[in-house]
Length: 272
Image 1 (cartoon, helix red, strand yellow):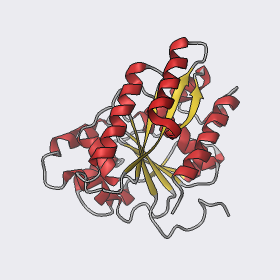
Image 2 (cartoon, rainbow, N blue to C red):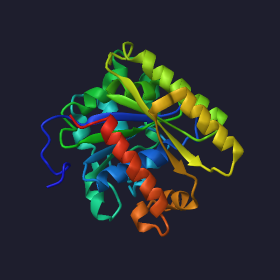
Image 3 (tube, helix red, strand yellow):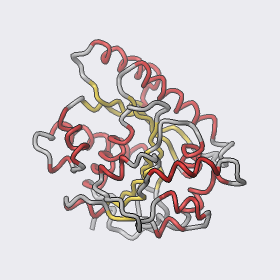
Image 4 (cartoon, rainbow, N blue to C red):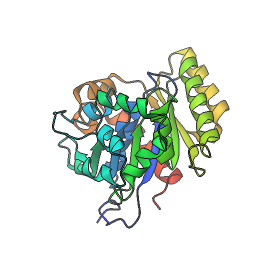
């Protein structure tokens, strides 16, 4: 019996993955880290907190009008309602059964209009209460904003993880995200919230600017830089085709990078 196959008696560890800039590989890292954790035997939930719904699509989820999404769970403003939203993903890899999804569609954007309502920032946490005890981890794919949806995500999370490309603007966005996390716990009624680490993605050592920005990332984040994912077309191809890396040719190098990240992740964010 694997770690993830054991019946959990506690709720999942909830991890918000973000950056205050678009194009920072948030969705790629959320999906591929979930894949690596599932391969290692953990039961993983992916919460798609971006109205674009890219994480949902890349996990093979097909949107149909009758299917519930995270938007409806938040709108309901009721404890545990997320239990009705968890759905299987569309991959057929053997470990895919250990990944479940809180999918998103564009209607998630409507939740922004509720930002001024009493307790609105706690609605995701309320929806998850008692609804994630069957999981080891939930990875939330965030949008490139520090607005209401991101704040709801952080209010429900145990820790946050940043993701960045090795570029000046992307790294600045990661710094803003980290600093926001570190100063917002009390305001979000989540004083235990912390920033756990940074993933550097799309790295090409042949590009001088990448080498320089990786050095800057290590200066700014120190030991919180968890690892580096190389820039490889195979990763883009897998994302575009909504396939697990295990079903894509010549993906061994990238798979190894995410497996190492998963090992660091479990060390830094252990299952309770």
